[in-house]
Image (tube, rainbow, N blue to C red):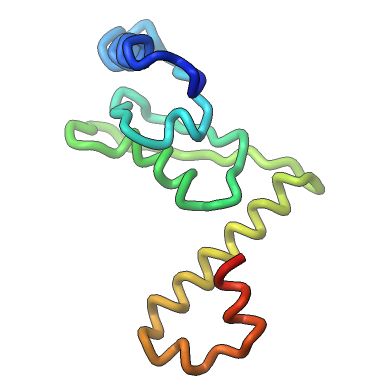
Length: 123
C-alpha cells in the first residue's frame, strides 16, 4: 500500500489483512504505514527502507503492537553492507544514543554541552 491510497482503499486492505488468514503479506511504505493503522495480524515486520528518524521505523513496527495482539512480533531490518542504508542506520544509532543521554542526564546535561554538540542536537 502506498501513501496515495484513498482512505477507503486503506481501510479495505487493512481489514482484509486483519481478517483473512489467507492474506499473509502486507507490503506498505514506512510513511504510509507509520501512523493510524492497526496490523495485529502481523507477526513479522521487515524494514527494507530505513528512515533518517528512528522514531518513524519504531512507529511502523508499533502498528503490530496494539491492543488485541496475541502473538510475539519479530522485527527485522534488512541492511546491506557498505550502502547508504548502512550509513542511515549508523546515524539513527547516534541520534538514539544522544537522545538517551539527554533524557538520562536531565536538565543539568545541557549545561555540560559544548557548542558543536549543542548544534548536533538540531541536525
